[in-house]
Image (cartoon, rainbow, N blue to C red; front, side, top):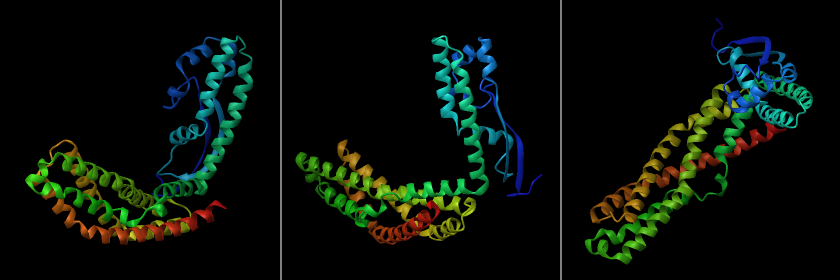
Length: 307
């Protein structure tokens, strides 16, 4: 049995039988009625044979086996299989089964070309690099447009101000004040979701991407990037936990106001929580600086690997 992380040379016949339907995606791509059309027509059945060609590559034996390579390889051309399915249906409806031969030959060529390129990318590490680049881009997208204060300070202070009318029994009975406060609390929560919520999602995605990149990416600079982000995970995780608490508090206060359940006692509780979270402003400032720093380095790596 190969050792962990050991490369194994896979050399076998890549085979996808459209009529055999052993790959899970095929049941969605190749409809039962089209399969029946082919099986009930001798000419079509002689055309649509299993797609076969030889595949050879060195891949991580822990991650890959022949069945997984066939299933993942199939996904590189499943879109063409769906198109071919419709071509068969049309050819049968038009009573022109001969038209299927050209389409099938084209499908086989596309399949071989697509799978060969995919295997080459997997073996070279390009596929891992591409996955990391895509994940990093998604995590950091739009960060440069966010005002750090809008992440926590602005929505937190806005919510505290909005809760003031509820801090007395008289204020809680003033319908106009309640309506105004409810709108202000919703606005504070919406601002947080737009900014702080986005940053929180980005931080979590960045940590996840860094963890995978540090262990699976083949490019040295990407692997080093993953390790660097990992070293700051304490700061990021602490900030993320606090942002989760802020999100929960703002949401509950906003919903309580809109449901008419916000009274003096609840307003006092939410206000105390929000005031105690003043330290979050500093955590966000520090965390956001790290996000920006890592973002600039990631952009340089992305530019290098895109050339």
